[in-house]
Length: 175
Image (cartoon, rainbow, N blue to C red; front, top):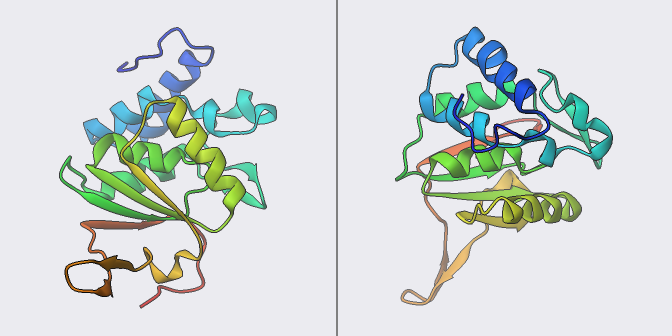
């Protein structure tokens, strides 16, 4: 197993998740397997759900939201075909677990969350883990990343991304 946390409380459960739930279901991308084998998923769930952190189903994280099941996180990430040059837009920060997986594989992650409380918790966890290639924004992600002012042109511009992942429930794909 590739992990900096072999001696952590849930090391066996994390290894089982990687071997059974991910590899056993067709996840083959080494970077995805490595990132998910390294990250302590229990850091991203409420303490009352810690013992189920590596179960292959979603768990509540507050505000009526959930952390996605590990297999879905792995599958969505694998389908992005990330490399360390990619800048990724994530719509739906949630607990920050998917964000952290993306951040281990991409150059930079820009993540939008509509609930300030969830964004703050995710920022705190990623900070504790030393993951610093993420920019957070609290707001409605249906419009993408917010406009920014380009001082050289004097007008707002949209940011371009190499990959976009929507991890939140949406009624339709925004233009």
